[in-house]
Image 1: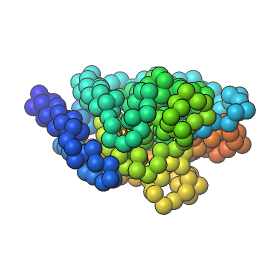
Image 2: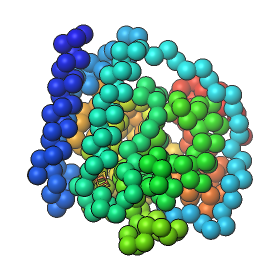
Image 3: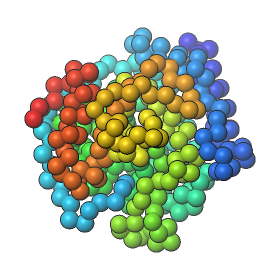
Image 4: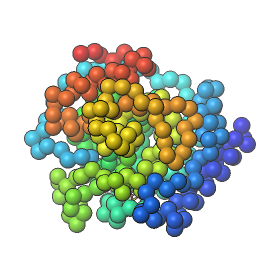
Length: 290
Ligand code: SF4
């Protein structure tokens, strides 16, 4: 086991070192392969476990009609596995916080690596930080985040039991010269996603959840298919394939609406709830049903 841990640490040090190489700063080459945690190392992490902001409408309301459910008890966690993953995610977060691979790095206030349970069964992935997230350096802490918290509770989970992150780690702004402005959010563009995607891929590979829930069309298309619309991607499970790292075990992904879109269009909540129930059924979660 000690050799395996040393191997994993070595792989990750090489990954971190690679972030500093000039070739990785070339944003004109999207989706270049970066040194990644080796499949063997990531498989080992899985083996240990086996052993043991988009723009928001001005008048949107936080009135939520997602049903409430009693959170389920947390599964027993393997402390070796948890320590290993925690260290890897913390190292990766430090890289993200100083990253300037794309222009967003020059205008952000704080990078937003992501946060949550390192042994989560469910990982939520949005498109990028918004105004509040940029200021706090945490994902989904604004009005859309409050709705996401309610969605998570309705599933019978809790924020502390899932992992939450974004495709882009820095705040994409319509007017980067005025970061103090509200309503200045935009989705990350293709070049920014290409530059940043290896970070979310590494996070998914380290946490290795059972299910990823892509929030909104930008995240869904980035992780599932560039071509299809959110409508075409919703309502079914997809096998997740990553570009820069091999998953230690299969991960499935579904797509649903971004909470900010649900704030603008509350009539979509019923469809979003049906999406979440697909994952709940697979995990045996006893969330309240509508
Ligand atoms: S958005 Fe991603 S790639 Fe761009 S600077 Fe931030 S962390 Fe780096």
